[in-house]
Image (cartoon, rainbow over all chains, first blue to last red; front, side, top):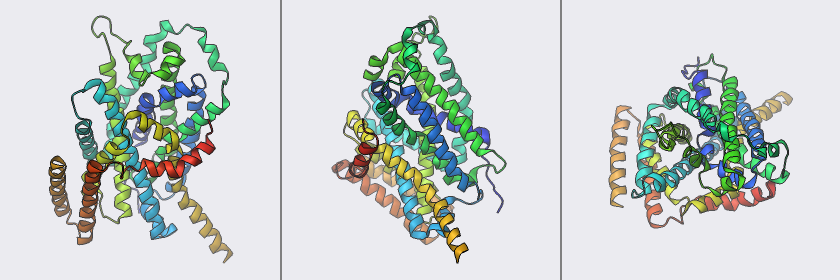
Length: 365
Length: 73
């Protein structure tokens, strides 16, 4: 069957570019500054390469059958029960991730900008929009990413230019050596699954235009997003210092408070947050859409649309119960999420491994 | 709880509309309503007994020891 997909290489690269740094820039840089202030740059680089390699490897098998969903064809390889188990676990992971992103957003946005509004109301509004995007189809999220990519990329690309006068400091010498190998390893290990989340692309290969160089687009998008992350991290450490960066909840937002456009705009953080939210929304929508798709494939439904809004309600409820307060969420996340995520992200490799073992068995018979 | 019931009511109505428009078979309808029912029960439990339905405890229990061994700080 011929591939009928419409997602182009530029759309894949744009989505990955936005996906890689949208949540990391807001929620991961502070813990990284606290645990590995000068080695964090190397952690980000190593994790980017390892996580992207994991994603590209997962795509290798899926791209061999570009017209078939791995979640549906997988039943022929690992059996119905095995396939359903893999799909349900992966779906739970992506829905849990959606709930986590939603919770982190409400924990940041509500106390900062909407003090009198109940968090659950904001969660319902945001999730309704994400569910509507998922309802319109996965390619719509890619098209939206393509539209937002230039504005988001341009903004975060030029942001460091506003701080050039403050960049002359002897602190740059500290970035040229490794201070703590243990911290470097633990931060790299924690960050790899953030890039590894892109294995969701393996589950939606039939939606890609068959003529596109998907793996090349993945590498380019990922490395471009990593550049933004590294430049923001360097800016944060050099301008705010390692101790203050680690102590602040949202150091990237504090940095934005120092930006102004002459006398016209005194504080650009509202503009930056509005544009950044578009990136977070893209990530939330695509993760939720893939989670919903996997649930529908696991349950044998002919289409995922009828279960989109019920699952959105589930994600909102899940985001509320994940933790009582932000510190508990961060603690739980820090303690076990990376290993859980890596385990689930590696489940997609069960298909090619079992396929190869069965192929070898048939040859010996 | 009232808001939850009203919200899920709206979701079910839209779901019925989608299933009719897509001419879904009986099995698909049963499964779709089953998912909605699960979401409603989960949300109700999240309201009354949030500690019971937090999956992070199970994730911490299974993967926490493995992670502390792999990424020793």
